[in-house]
Amino acid sequence: MSDEFTRAGFDISVISDPPYAPDTPPELLPPDLRKKEAVLCFLFFVLTKR
Image 1 (cartoon, rainbow, N blue to C red):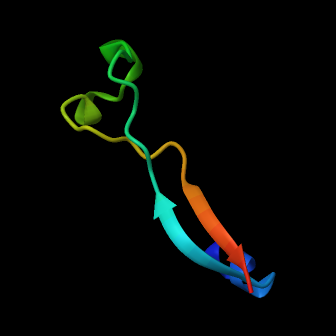
Image 2: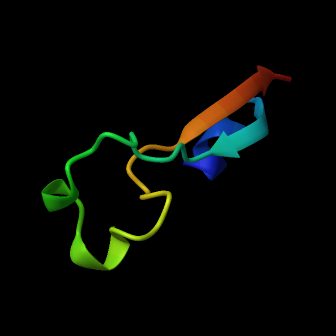
């Protein structure tokens, strides 16, 4: 994705992956991730046009 953004004339200012909601039921989280604060589900890009 980052290559496509830059090819389209954008600079990437920020890439972030927000933590999952604290009220997410534990049974919805994979067992190996239940003790972690973040799960890679979404990436948010802040872009600026060159």
